[in-house]
Amino acid sequence: PKRPYDITGWTLAMQMGVQYDRIQDGFDGPFVRIPGLLPPPASSVSGPSTAAGYLISHQINNSFIVTNRLLKAGADVYWVKKDQTIDGQDIGTGAIWVPASPAVRPILDKAAKELGIPVHALAKAPTGDALKLKPIRIGLYDSYGGSMPAGWTKWLFEQYEMPFQTVYPTTLDAGDLKSKFDVLVFVAGTLGGRGGRGGAGGGGGRGGAAAAGDAVAVATTAGGDAAAGGA
Image: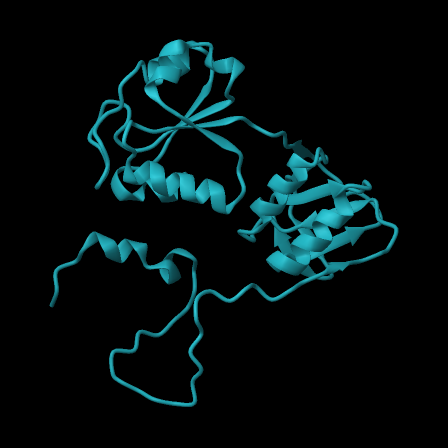
């Protein structure tokens, strides 16, 4: 048997809870090659035409994209704490509630069609507590010359349309971080530890001390190559 290797931890089917069969023998059949990724099946906005607002499941990865688009447009966005059920289907805790407004519907129509996100129009708002979201100013720390963990984290931010700014040691040394950022993300190895595979070593500047002194929230990612997933 082959010795285990860390790359097995990047098996996406396992990470995403997809059931699959591992086939090691050759086979043939009436198959069609699919080049690249297929777009998700188009969905739609369902429910009454005159709605108090719209509910979206938090369990769908692309829901983070539509959340960022709504916040960028200045829409009100909430996470509902109580489990929500639509037509007998449980859409989970933290469902996204968006009160109706002229700017909201075009964004949701486009997201349903292009991102495959089912959007449920409701005649009245869900009951119970909810958390109101607000746009946050994200700073992603990177060392000069770049690092692999920072690159993966940056890629994730870009895929989910999260606004962020790359931060270098000189920005930390300049201080006054709370006027620029709400959150600083430090990938593995940049707070004086060992860099992730392919990355530089610990970053210069005041690092986490600067963030703490300026009352900015600090987020660190998991060690080594898992940093991207921890973002």
